[in-house]
Length: 335
Image 1: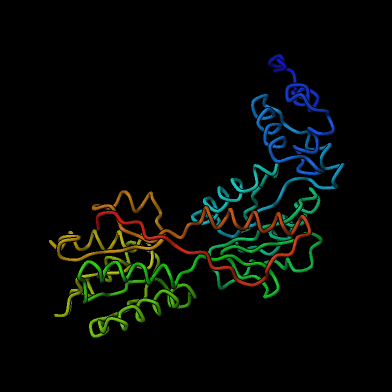
Image 2: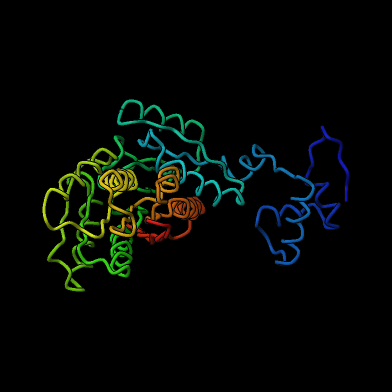
């Protein structure tokens, strides 16, 4: 293969020479255009990777009138949902030569407009809008932009592509796991009652218990998304005679507070009470003692699917609009 010095840029001519094909064939293979056999296309791409070939983004953008970049707009300034989502978007688009840049807007409409205009000035190929609530839109109107927009974990218009985790399915998996452990007096300690996901998970909780005739002891306690609320909920639950033997929590922070509060009362987890969280926020779930069984929202995969959906729109392909619900996964640990 062609050797290049450490400061030399590998060109498409080097790739063509090393792969023993014409420059035109190499270009078609690397850009996924033209009539090139799959075997030849794969071989040329493999050679390009081995040589460290990086296509000239400016030349590609001039040829295709694309910037090969997308913007990620979010009001999730804490990054709990956005960072794994962005990792998935980047993973899904990197093989297509598309880069992602993030703009955090908080809940500031003026800042949001500034960032959207900056994205358009940079001629992004499209925008992914994401947030921290599926029932509230970002503080900016994205419906009349000159580029396609995909929504993830935030409310989008009915004629758009919106991706969310399947909260009902995830909650059902959590309750069924508790039932499989022989638990029948199950409580649900969750977040604020004005969140759509809270009602979806609570509804799935009630339905799963109803299907096995275990609703007699079911209790739903609404509060904040915090460890402190987990402590308070245990105080309320243990003030009565009918104490639960299983607790499904609306997120991992609540679950950690629940587990800590039970331990302080001398209640063993999972021997006396089994606990399941929601989110699989590993920095919380893995460090809980015992490590927390929880529902993974599969945010990385959700981001990957959002990125690929946007790419299809950019390429002018037909994409089904509406809400796409992606399945969650139960991560079984020790709680």
